[in-house]
Every structure is written in structure tokens, then in C-alpha cells.
Length: 277
Image (cartoon, rainbow, N blue to C red):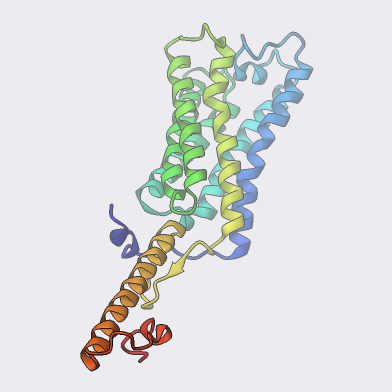
């Protein structure tokens, strides 16, 4: 898509500062998963992150099962709440896909918490699949939604999403020799809270400040990258006008007194545009 197409696209809906803060806080709080998982592991004697699945921490054999399952459910609520609050800030097709995929991930982790692996049966498996698939693909979609704001953050989210997809595919197909069964599952599962925290920091810091209205007053936003390109184009136009003014002045001087080539050159006047003169 060309820059001109981007500039004429409908402007995203503005959000209040409170809504940015609330949505960003929800996504930042998804990092609670790492804290409560560490507590559950500490209470589960002999647990191995490399050899055992995350869901084992939520079974009846785990002393921290209630805490871990509560973390799963809270994770889904936080993902969905952040997506709902920040929805208008996620622009384009990437934003719409991100909402669908992140919502799927949210539903998945809630199912994992409500139906532990030791007695949840197929429902637990469906929940785990929804979370893992929604995580990787959701982060890639989110990357495209946020790339107009920051190419660096968009790249980070895309890479995290790709890592998550690779981890999910390897885990699902049993290719776990390198990192172990639990280790490979964590490659697919850990990327989402990390990516959402990165996105939350960007959105809270920028708010709506990334939008710039065109000089003509059109109701269309410019990204920072587009603004830099517009400034370069304007600088080029100014330089071209100066060159034309210099050339016109030289021709005017030569026509006024062709026998006196040594007439003093008024540099200040030459650099003025025809309109300024």
C-alpha cells in the first residue's frame, strides 16, 4: 500500500487517557502469570519446567493448583479486557485480526483454568490449542496493527509471534528433543504476555500523539514515518524553488545589462522566491 493510500485511510477513533491507561494496565498485568507460575513451581517439589507441561501445575497433584488455575483464568480476563479497551487504537486489518485471535487466546486460557488437564479431557485440550495458536498469530497481527506507530515495536511483536508459532508447531508435532516437552510448550506460551506488555508500554506512552493531521486540514492521520517523508518532500520543493529563483535572477540580470557582466550579485534577492520578490 502506498503512503498516499495510508494518508487517505479513515482516521482511527481517539481514546481517552484513562482508557489507554486501563487497557495498558490490563496487558501489563498478564505478566502475573510468570509470578504465580514460579510460586506454583516452588510449591511443587521436583517439578521440571523442561520435562513437564505447564498444565501439570493445575492438576490435583500440584499443591499450588488453585493458584495456578486462578492465574490461567485471570490471564484470559486480562487479555480480553485489554483488547476491548484498546480496540479503537488497533488500526487496519491487522488490528481486526488481532482482536479475534487474542480473544481466542483469552477464551483458551480460561478453559485451561476451568478444566484442568487431569479431569478436563477434550475441553482442556481445546483450550490449550486456542491459547497457543491465538498467541503466535495474534502477536503477528498485533505487530501489523501497531507498526504505523513504531516499526521497532512492530518488528519485536512479529518476531515474538513467529517464535510462538514455531514453538507451538514443534510442541504439537512432538519435536521436543531440544528443549524438552515442557520447554517447547513454554516457547509457544510465554511469548504472549511478553508481547502484550511491550505493546501496552507503547500504547500508554504514545496515546493519540502519533497521529498528525495533514497541513491541508484533511481528516486523515500521518504516521511518524509518513511525516518524515512529507517533510523531505517539502524540503525538496523548497530547494527546487530556490534553484529556479537563482536561475530567473541570473537571466534577468543578464537581460538588463548584457554589456556589464560584472554587475554586483545580490545573493539575498536571488534566494527569495518570485512571490517574495
